[in-house]
Length: 92
View (tube, rainbow, N blue to C red):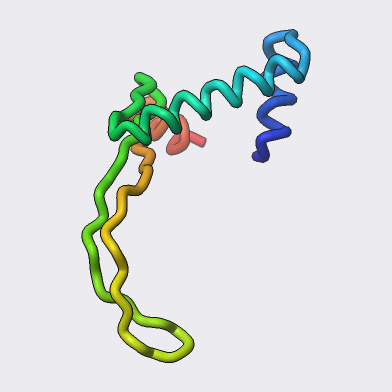
């Protein structure tokens, strides 16, 4: 599902114009992004949590040359599905 499809569905289900639905979705995404940048998590009970994980520095390989390269440590966003979401997907 694309962002445009989500906006269209939000507009249809709520009866609001697509421009307002898009603004609401953009606000949600900006809020989650800003919170993760601060190193905090966002939890939506029953749906899941957006969290920041730390990835350690490690050695990697350049696939073209085979040379060993150093991959720096990084903070990466992760999503952990909640129980209700997992159950809904399992049931199909």
